Length: 345
Image: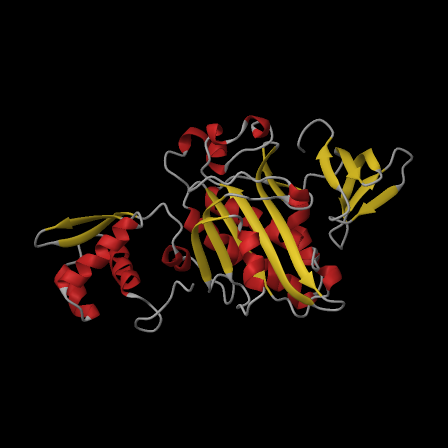
């Protein structure tokens, strides 16, 4: 489902009308719009009605025309596109009101021909999931539940997990740009604020012996959730961007802007990674925010759980920890689950 379809160089009439309203602080006459579009004023009015159904607050005045008072709170392709600076990511958007999960839909799409950088978004997920099969609460209209589909043909399967590091750095950067909140990263891919999880990233991949067929970056961000939206068992470990902004955040955070900034940063960080095949430049940013060094950690492996002291992150994006006898151990992201010894991080 492309958001750019049909009319005049790929733009549809609703987008043309919406852009005209956004570019003018005052009123835009229905007569002017009908002339520009080559349609009747009745047709313009019908498109205005469709925009209102999507959540745009548009005032109309006799003999003056239309004026945009408020953009939609819903996820909207044209709103996301206004802020996109990417070449590939997000140029094809698939938007849904509800899905089992965006990653599940991504897997269904991956069985077909798709354009690299296709993004799937849903207002809610009924079966959202995180790492290790954990449930991800995804209420309607309050979060950013999205999956980015890629065909990284030049990437070997053994390096696919490195994109999790890239994605974590990109999301952290985008969140900081949009909200001005300083966030941390819980290795390898959770975005946290004040010791609570605000975002999780789930990377899934289909590969043959020496080539990746498809790769999905699933990103779930608690954007505008209130405290009562979290089930009791998650209230001590989960939070949202709106909660963290506190009383100063009177209005909802713009999810469309945040989505676009994530894609902008993901392409920027991704380019650094793909051009060199190394995480070096991405790690400069990642290491400044990852909550590992000198922290007491509880490392869960298939062989048991162990207390360790965090040392840092290797050039491959692996976790480095120190044992009680001073030895250094190294773990890949798929091998272990890490928690703070006295809390989430």
